[in-house]
Length: 315
Image (cartoon, rainbow, N blue to C red):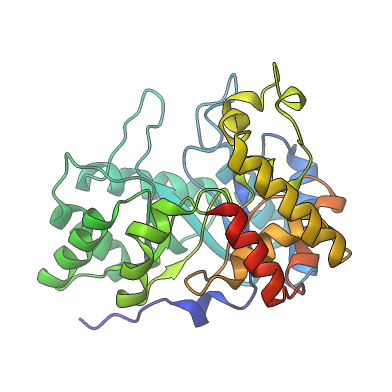
C-alpha cells in the first residue's frame, strides 16, 4: 500500500496550531466554545489535544479536553472546518499507558467517542514506549490508517535514535510512518531539537509542530524576575528559566519587541516560525488579548539584525 506523506505544505493552511490542553481546565466549556469560534474566525484551522488532557487537575482523570471539543463539534456541526490532532501513550490514571497494540486500539476508540468524530486528521504517539517493539507500534498505527480512523501519524517526545528506528520499522513492514514530529522547542529550549532531531526531520521531510512554544509563558515577558513566580503554580514550570541565559533572552525580546512595536510573545513566535525546520508551533490563549498577540505573530517579519540578536542571546 502506498501512503501519502504529511509535510509542511499540508500543515500550512495556517501557521499556528491551537493547544487544546486549556479546554475544560483554564477555560470552562462556554469559554472554550467561544475561543474555538474566535480561532476559526481568525483564519486558523488546526487544534491539538490529547487523551490525557487535563488529568493533572484535581478531580480530572483525562479526556476532559477531548470531551469539550466533542461537544463543540456536536453543537456547531463544523468538523470539516477543523484539522484535528490527538495523542496516545501517556498514562491515563487507573487505565493504562504505552504504545502496545492493545492500548492504542482501545484508546483511539475512546478518543474518537469523546471527540464525537469518526476520524482524526493526525494521531501522535505522545511519548516513546521502549517496552513495546517499534514494529508493533507502527503496525497498529498502520491499521488505523488503513481503516480510515486516522489520516496521518506523528511522534512526540522521541529522541533521534528512536525516531529513526520508528521510521525504519515502518519502512521494513511497509506500514504508514510518522510524518510529523512534535518536539519541545522554543527560543530558550533549543538544543535537544536542534542538535538531535532537526537534521532527521529535514532528511525524512517531517513536519515539525513544537509544543511549549512560549516556554510555559516565560517568553511572553509577563514574568521578569523569579519573585514573580515564587510560591505560585507557575514556579515548578518556570523556575529553571531564570538563569543568566534566560534573563539575556528576556532582555533581547524586550529590545526587539520595542523596535518592532509589538510584544515579546509575538517576537518569540515569529522567531520560532522563521526557523527553517518548523512548520507550525502549538500555542494557547485564554483571552482575546492573548489571541490577538498570537495573530500578530503571524504577520511579524523579523529582520536579520533581530534574528541575530535573539540567536546570540539564546545560544
